[in-house]
Amino acid sequence: MKTKLNTIGLIGKYGQEQLGQDMRRLAEFLLARNLRVIAENDTARLINLPEVKGEKIESIGEKIDLAIVIGGDGTMLYVARNLADFEVPLVGINQGRLGFLTDIAPGMMLEEVGKILDGDFASEIRFMLHAEVMRAGKIVHTAVAFNDVVINKGELARLIEFEVYLDGEFVNNIRADGMIVATPTGSTAYALSAGGPILHPTLAAMAVVPVCPHTLSDRPIVVSSDSVIETIILELGDQRSYLTLDGQASVSLQDHDHVYVRKLTHPLELIHPSGRSHFDVLRAKLHWGEKL
Image 1 (spheres, helix red, strand yellow):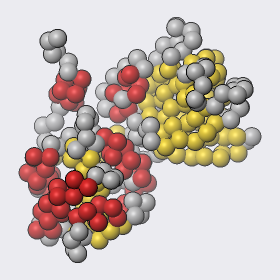
Image 2 (image 1 turned 45 degrees about the horizontal axis):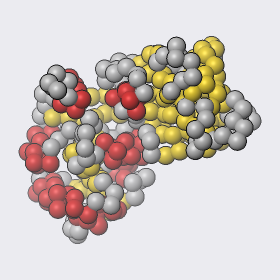
Image 3 (image 1 turned 180 degrees about the horizontal axis):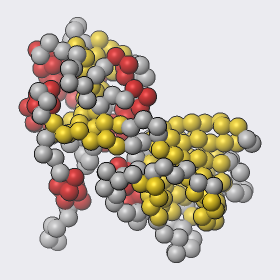
């Protein structure tokens, strides 16, 4: 993160009118420190201060030095994807449920943000994923994801079939409900529910996790983050299949589509309160060690 911050971006959870008061308090706090504040359009409407200008989420990244996200992990995922090209550091105020990524409690918001602005913080570099869909030899869709890229079946309770390649080498033919390619960040999300491993955030690795495979010996594997994972969709018949990004955006797949997943070229910087421990987070959020 830059040592000198001039402009702060504020982005709140979409549609949460009750967050307006917290957003306004935070905006007033930042303005009192002589910082310029730009908010995403809906957030600016809730803040309702003449000094805070609104901006589209697609363009706010080129104008700010730091983004403060007020919401849950889903809001952070949405913001990370939209700001991926700008390499803007992100800070999360937790107004959601789990808070793996948005780890500042609302009651500590001003105190912790003040410490971060004073240089008392922990910086963490994480990577994102880049996905491409090739159809009949042409790239028809590209997208980025922070947690995971998922190939999943459609409405019918019927397996889909696909082939998986790693850096061009054939791995397996799988019949399953789908497959998850997860970053270390996403290893505690959908991939964990599907039986995948928890990856430490510093690992340069991706988890490839089949979802309800027909062959029970099809197990999750961990591969280098420098790998390219290629999936070829086989005959779908009257079944449907989708490519889903972070559980929030999707595109329909067709027979013989090739899906390529690789590490995004530029990383993402998360800013945390000083002294934060990844294992403290796991114990708190996953209830490790608690007696039944």
